[in-house]
Image 1 (cartoon, rainbow, N blue to C red):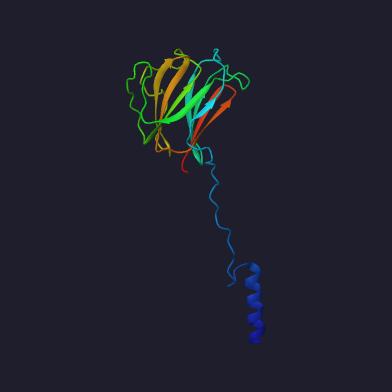
Image 2: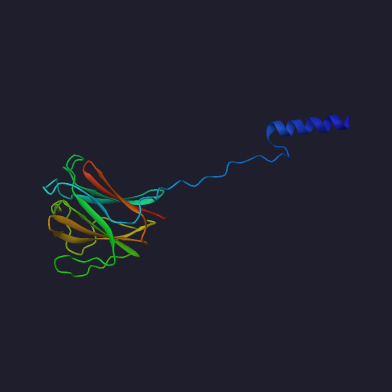
Length: 182
């Protein structure tokens, strides 16, 4: 009788999942973050004609990267702004060579062939980009305006460290993603 009670108790505990048999729990998997972008210079061919003017800059936090979006109304995939981006030891106003301090452990220099629409996005040389707050960002630290010259807007993007980054061209937007880690 005692043996039958033990077998029944074991059977009930096993069937309800409360038995002594350890359940195999799925280990939580970390999000697979793409970091194959590398940290080398990026460039994209584009129009040297006016494709639109920079009207706004905004940022976003994602699981694997921080994002900066340059809104350029009128820019299309078929006729994008040309862009160049690379890590530099320091950021400067190109024509004068005057240094512009940018906070962070590394600086990405970004240039793109669209002027700044000063009536929509008023910004002066060496100013922080208006409306951006990098509090709570894992990678982004600062962004400064380096002027408009040689048909290109010049931005210094301060990041935590030299990390992988990519550039994307979307309708009306130029996007910079900087990974949180390698």
